[in-house]
Structure formats: C-alpha cells, structure tokens
Image (cartoon, rainbow, N blue to C red; front, side, top):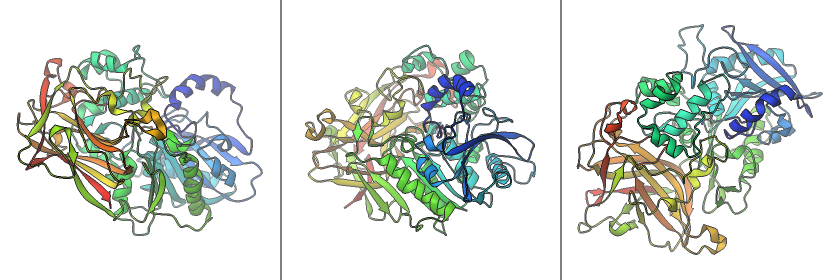
Length: 614
Ligand code: PG9
C-alpha cells in the first residue's frame, strides 16, 4: 500500500507510469517541509534508503512518524500535500519514509512478509530489527527530535508497523497498523479459509518479485476471467509464464496446507501482548485485508492489561480512509458523512498527538465503528459489544430465510450443479487485472449481487420485508450443512441487504443487493486446516464459516438475503471438486462437475448466527 502516494495500490499503475519521468524531473517538494534523502546503515551493514521531511526552521522538538514500505519512497509527496497525514503535518512531525530491505533504492534481499528472525542469533535481521536500527539512527542523526517515534501505514506498510511493535525500540511508543494482513492462509490477501486467492496472489507476487520495483503482469486480455479460465491447471503458471522465478508462488505450491510456513508467518505467533499503544484500522469492505486488523485486535486484546489496544472500523475499501471524503463507496452512499476527513482529523491525528506529543486528553474509545445502514459513528467500550446476543437466521424451503427453525416436513435440501468449467465470476465481467486501468477491484465487495442472483449455480434465501430496523453488531458465523457428489468443494456464503424494490431515497439503488458479509471455505479443511480430508460423496457435514465482524442496520422496508455458491472466480481458484492432495498439482482431468446439496432440515439446519442488538 503506497500510503504516502495515494494510500491505495491503485497508485501502483499511476506510479509505474509516472515514476521514471517523475524520478528524473522531481524537484523536492519543500513548501513547509525540508526534504532529505539518506541511506541508513543496519546492523548487518546493509543500507536502507529513506526520505525525511522535517519542518523548515523547526524550533520545537518533534517526534518521528515512520512509514516503511515495499512500494518505493522516492516519489513521496511532502506531508503538507499528502491528505493522509496533512492534519498531522499541520501540527508538526518529522516524517520518515523508508524503502524496506531489497526494494527500490534499499540494499539487501527482499522477502515477502519476511519471517521473524531467530532471536538466538545476534546477527539475524527481520523487519523489526530494521525498524529498530532505523529509529536508533534517526535519534542520533536528525536534530530536534523529542526522543519518540511512531509508525503508521496501510496494508504492507501496516504489517511492517505491527511487526515493529512486536519488538519495539524503546523510543517507539505508538503504532497505527492499518489493514495489516494477519494470517495469509486463513484470511486476507492470499487465502481465505484455505481457499487460494488466485488472481490476487499471482498478480501481487509477480508485481513484487519479478523485479526490485513494481511491475504488472501483461495479460494481453482485458477480461482476466477469460485468461485464468484458459490457463487451466495452476501448474501452468510456472510451466508457461514465470518458470519458477517467483519465490512466493513457489511457496504457495509447496505449502498447500496450514503448515509451519504459514503458522510462523501469522501475526498470532509473532506478537504476545501490546507492548506499546496499538491502533488497528480496517474497512468493512476491504477487498484485501479486511480480517487482519479485526484478528490482530482480537488476540492482542486478551493480554491488554494497560489498555493500549484500540480498533477503528469504517465503511471503507482497502485504505479508503487515507484520502478523499469517504462519503460513498462504489454505489453505496453514507448520508453525506465525510468518513475520511473525520478519521484523519478526529481519530488518527488526535491519537498520535497524545502518544507522541502528550497533546489532548488521552481519552480514546476502545472501539470506534462507522455503523453502516444507520450511517453513524459509534463508540464501544468493548468489541464486539456486550449488548449483542446471537440469533440464528435459518435457510428454509422455497427460498425463505427466517428466524424460525425449519420444520421436519419441509424437504431436506436445496441443490445446484457446480461446474468447475463454468465458474461464477466474483465481480461482473469483464474483470480487468487487479491493479490495471479502469479496474473495479476496489469496489467489488459493494457490487450489486443481482449480477449472479438468478444463476442456476447460485442459491438464494430471503426474508419477508422487515417491519422494523434490525441491528447486527459483532462477529457472524455461518453454519452450513453441505453435501457434495464430488470429494472436495468450496462454499461461499454471502449475507446481503436487499434494498426496497422502489427505493425513493435513491431510485437507482432500488432492489440493490448489497453484500455486508461474505466468505469462502474449502471443504477439505472442515476438520483441520493442517490435515485436509476428502468429502464423502452424499454425506452432509457441518461447514462453519467465520464471516467476521459487521456493524450494520438492516432498515425497515429492506429484506435480508443469503446466497450460497461454490465458485468465486478468479479471485478464488477453481476447486477441482475431485479431491487431489495438492490442488497446485491438479491435472485438467481432475476438474469435474459436482452436485452440491445445502441442507435445511431438523438436525441439519443451515443458518447464520447473527449478533443482534435488541
Ligand atoms: N494487500 C497488499 C499486501 C500486503 C501484505 C502482503 C501482501 C500484499 C498491500 O496492499 O500492500
């Protein structure tokens, strides 16, 4: 996440187009800030490239605000001109942007999501030692600092921030991790519940690993749905295109299950307790790392004895809080609320001002969310709040969704044929490459689900029109009783807010099917993510799918819908539906059609557990 450029990876393309020209022509932007480039020595002699912006004619002693990134810092704008940190720039900080090891102008070898070092080896390095050495050098070499440092950043830069907090320099007192990934096998960029995020993982690995600077894969096909389908089995990626040159792709192939490679990388194994103040920031519709901040907050909260662990979640796409007004996302609007400026000024700037400068009253809500549907900011003393009580909403016969359990006479299941040769697109085609021109990647989670609603391989269940508002605040769990005629399957569950058929407030939203929660589960992992097992054809089994947190009001006059499908392509690779030990090594002939049965009967009553606030 090029947070200091535009705070979104869609800046990748912009940057690629302008970087060469800009880097040659750029006159340092010095308005109220002076700009300086330095090479900072690390403990093993490797030097990292950084850009430092300090206020001109600085008289006060100021803290450092650091951002460490793989996306290149040479083009960093003056903080004065960078909406993401403008409020803080007005207040005065020393901003430091650093290329992480092995990227852009920094020396050394890059490793994506670098593992933590062996602490017994005094010479070993990792992202936390690189941060430590950077801060150490800054304290000694940049005048007029107040001896304190904070770090912030989005996505990869959020991850470098939270990793720094795992083993912080004594001067480091506060970190705002924003959209960090937490566990790349269970959620976030690379897999969800073991299902491989094909298009994202391939395109990202290529972008970061084919060279030292960002480079996009050339598809020569505007509709990547078509490209990935024609690709055939995943082994063709190496065979035909990258020939073993992407270390991360090779790791995906070698580690198809939740083994030590993934467990060691996950934040849970790298962070014990909040040693400094940590703010987790996420978006309800984050298309890359929606779960990371929720997950990181949750496990650090267990050991937060000094009340230093905070969470903020708003109605944003990946990094959507960093620029612009945030008063809409795709087609969805938030009653004119400017959620972006509110976050930057009232939440982010005040939080850092307190921890790094001692300014303000230090009173911060434990959890701040922007509640969608009602479109209001909410403060909670606990996340999820204790006011919510779990209530199941059941799949019933004839496409009904209801808080009442199914009766014995309703028939047992609904079924569909999932054809791995004709997967359901995850967003409306053409599906442009993720970071390509005109890509709708950034908004796909808010896309109107009517584009797949009546497909024969997508099932839907819907409530009657709601006669009063229904508030759902907290973590959701889908419990699906599913059987397949194959020996492996994916199940995608989507919870949808259906707008009234004639929505006078905004006519074009009439009947809109807005996903408010969704996820996929690869059934081979239903008993263990480390030891996959084939499904037994025809046997209904419980598949529990974590649908994560939401804070949403289904308004009176709306309906609630659940959709279930078995493909979500190409964001999720095709499950062959015939069990093979490693899907990365499946042959074309392993990909088959299968009949899926979703049970909705006594003893096998598929439902979603909703945290309802009465
Ligand atoms: N989602 C991106 C990412 C973060 C960490 C690892 C891999 C990818 C990003 O936006 O930086």
